Image 1 (tube, rainbow, N blue to C red):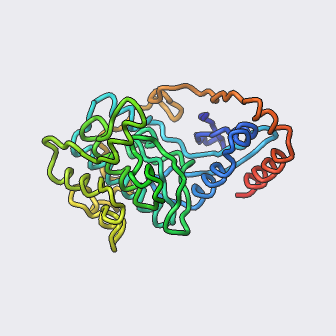
Image 2 (image 1 turned 180 degrees about the vertical axis):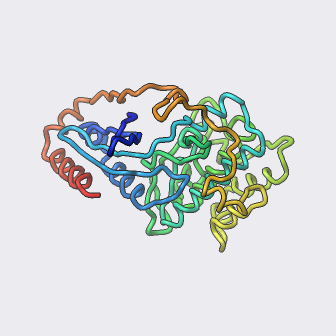
Length: 311
């Protein structure tokens, strides 16, 4: 990811440029994921979801030009303080719930909610990023196992097929982590984490009663009984007593002061990020190298190029 500057009539604008080498996408069998991410981003329009400005390509790479949020990751803020104050957790949770509901309204399941995928903008408001695992659902269920272990819903782990309810499970995990400082299911190995998720025994301690009610209604093993899966669907989550559902209009307009506003020297200040602008290097196996010389590679390159030539 690179911070880039664009000038029009002397006015400067800054964006995030996501550079994706064609060879790596095709060798790692990620063409469908990239095309899905592109289509999802063009199909959504919400103040708390990262906006795709344009797509581009050259001989070696495809690019996504995205709006920039320079406050860093929500994860970084959580790591600094250990756990968030309840009003701060309520603020972020309400904004994120609104974003998830918007995605579901566009028939899209997100499938990768975690604090690393929430950026903070210049006013202190959250934005969901990284839609690589997002998928449009035209049927009740899909079966691909994807996401981050701590946030996976039980039905994903047990390969029962899953739908929009997996996002509300992950949302429950995120709200718990914001308030407690650690995820409710935490262990040294992925297998141990999965075992804890299947057992689903959560310790709440002296948590705020409304927060506990929200989280316990989301961390329900049966997705059909999970909050957000009833007749009113996402509205049941948005209007829960812990969240600020009645303030959504003001939140969408970003008129309510955020709990933390990043201090920025200028429009290109990246000091709130813990990494620098470097492209990830991926080692290709012998099989990958052979693929790059095959007819299948050319077919996938044509498909990828055609998609990124269209807005």
